[in-house]
Length: 169
Image (cartoon, rainbow, N blue to C red):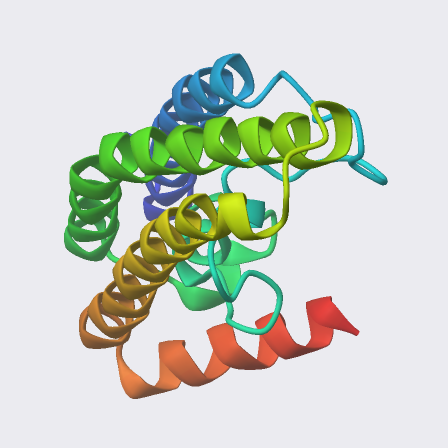
């Protein structure tokens, strides 16, 4: 007969494998879409994160709660994991599509102003279009933070925020 500890270990390994498999599918999809780096980009681009309006000063709780190696401190239930994955699935395609659009528009802007010698004023509408999409992406991010907060217990959320803060230092 299998002891409770061994059974718990088997279940835990199965959950981790399932989560990592889902992450690998999403990671491959992101790498396919964000692979063209702009000619003026300094450092490595973080696609799609870099295309949010507020991309450095808000936590990416979905990523931290599902795919971070230290996520085990949260002790997520299978129901919580399923809810988080479902939210991510619903938002992922929209975020990628919108981020690709921003990237494309920004590359066009760089071409227009730095290479083709257009006037700054002639590019204002394009800049405003980029800003509107970035605002919409950031609104999705804010909703995601709220949804993660609702799924986690107060204790789990506190641990996740503490981890996010310490990770950024």
